Image 1: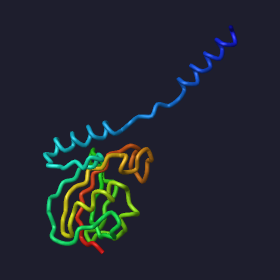
Image 2: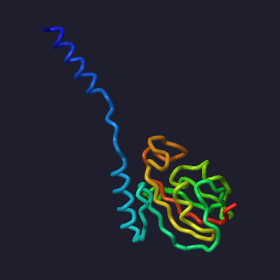
Image 3: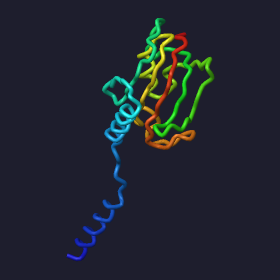
Image 4: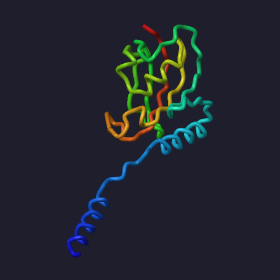
Length: 149
């Protein structure tokens, strides 16, 4: 009977040492909707956790998730700290080479269009901290779609 008790005790200890995985889906949703409210934004939800705001519609070509685009952008955290920014001329890249939030979000804009992408951590860098961006961060991008190549 003592062997069974020791086995039970070891099982309890092992299970209590496991890290609990946190699902950031609702946490990010709450952060994004609070940000939208605090900043009086009229944002559209996509159903994946991404929200976007179209400030200027644009009148040119509309990219798809496979397009190569030129985008001017400013990326910051919900506390306002900027983690990346392009020159006003923008940078060109294939949407297949960027975070999922951009792959999904940039195609909502047309050439000449601008607005904001509010990206939950799962569509950004997830649990990876990178280049001054803490793990599990909601990302805010002001974007201008300059060209669809």
